[in-house]
Length: 158
Image 1: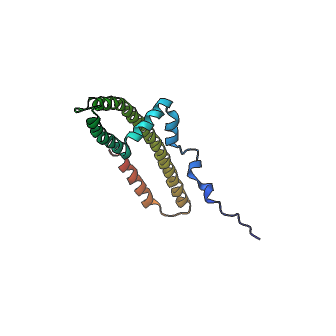
Image 2 (image 1 turned 90 degrees about the vertical axis):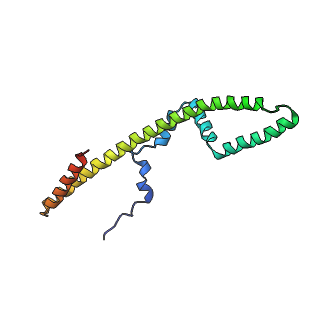
Image 3 (image 1 turned 30 degrees about the horizontal axis):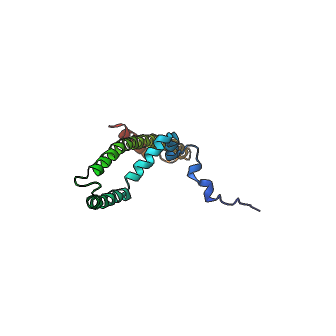
């Protein structure tokens, strides 16, 4: 009587459990200081369409209210001062956010390069094993060897 083992569940093949796969997003977030996290949140929210809509709405309300109440008449010096101070602060916050994005992209590129290098090495090992198996079972592998050699020469050219 042949007893077969049940097929492994799809959860057994979860790629995120592999020791060589890194969660680059989590790794980047863990490297941020609390101030950098705050800057990232502010930069993300100021880049949202709702922030633009809110800024336009505030100015559209401020101008008539300033004219009617004479609290900030034309040329709206208080509105301009507040706007300029806010812009100066946001310039530095956005610069920190851009630096973080650059660091995240660099980290992601390094991990992608490592993963691709491992995959290519694995593929080369598989090619070697398959050629050895084909040779042992006495198949004609000269055409395959020539094709692999040609591909490796193409890779070496700039």
